[in-house]
Image 1 (cartoon, rainbow, N blue to C red):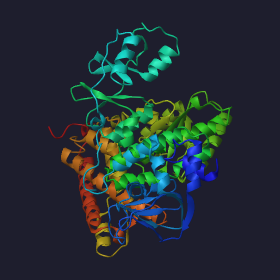
Image 2 (image 1 turned 180 degrees about the vertical axis):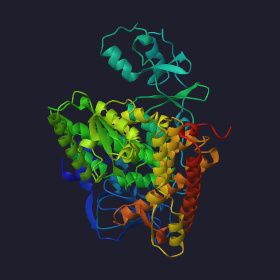
Image 3 (image 1 turned 60 degrees about the horizontal axis):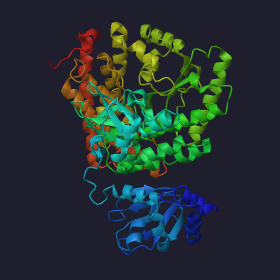
Image 4 (image 1 turned 135 degrees about the vertical axis):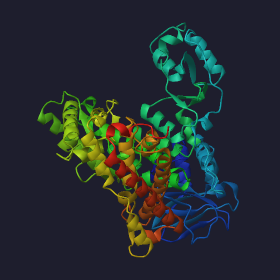
Length: 617
């Protein structure tokens, strides 16, 4: 198979074509180079004759007929397809396509397009494409919550059924699962995978009771849960199915990874699965280069910022897990089972953006008991960091990586260090380390609660330390005066993270700790602490709204920086913000400043033991 056929076969909708079909499509295609700014297609004026696939470079697409001097609706990169709608229908339905820089395209004549889209991947591609409402972008996207993905009544059986009877019920209902009520809102579950692995492969007879082989406690999601959270749960635990229950615990149905293919979050699931199956570091690097396109698509679909970063985080997790596994597989003297890889900071909270550094740490098993063995692992971790950098990711430059001894220790060493930070937070960068590690989330290895969280769960019993930590968090002030200066023309830039987002993250972390909440995301922490003395309900809701607004502005601005070829950062030129965004940023900073002032007063007159009390009762 020649290079062009191989390139096409690596991308949807060509993936399911046979080798002979790919060679036929490649033979009919032509490779064309376009200079920066060239008009490639205007199918609003004249119906298109070709389907286009981007080989190198980026293309701006106007999909809703807007003027060319308006911002493009989409910017797409290598492997992306456009022009299929007009080529298939022969109608002037768009898009308009312009080369963002020098671009190389594969152009396939209309006669070769129909066969491509009659394949399974072609049909799936069209379904995904049509699921995005480009004509009326103000309409909220579909599939915001998991119950919207449930399309059929639940398939229910009994624990004393035989596996033959259960399989018959599943076949009659065209279902790949069967739920078994256990009482108290809990369910067992039988799936095709369980039947294959624990009945057929194990040689069990057909009269084996379902109770002997089923998943004894199936995971569930409550109706109303955002699809991004459910997607993360499916991906994190590698589930075939997730049962959906209502508020009373009644079973509503089930979802599986395939249900997300027509959800806007589905692109993240597809990319994550491709990463999980990658056979080499080079393949992971190539797949990771699609991350900005994925993030851009999610932002342009007007998803909530928290949902967008959660989907993005799911793929970042998969990339790091796969790179770690590949690197350790190449070093047979090391054992992956001795390593728990933790993400810290915004990645730990599932709130990363294009400009976020990857902060991480490792908890070694106690069997890593010699300096030489620990050094061998750290050498492998340095290789992991090198691969991630090649993938375009920003590995922390200040040492928050497992290649550093300070961020790779055994569990007992972490516990000893955390206890010392609790007693003497001003020593050994205790405050900084505690803040960073309290956001820790394991993505590989032991999923148990991170040891730092264990130690700091009782921080309220150390009132002096608790006050120091909260006071330190309040030193990161929301700079309302800076914003006023900027808006008055006395300044040109504003740091969204330092002067707006970071103060909210800090308030959320310590407010949640004051009520002993294990939540990680900023929104969840604010919700958990809502109604406490530290964070009355009204102020908690205000900060949730403010955080969402600021993250949305941050995502849009970083994507714009990336697409202009600038260094991605949290510093924005205020004149580049739309007037509404400038107003929202200014109002957000004022709201944060108000909360900070109240918290500072509380520090003066109350003790940490009082902070978790409910203030709204």
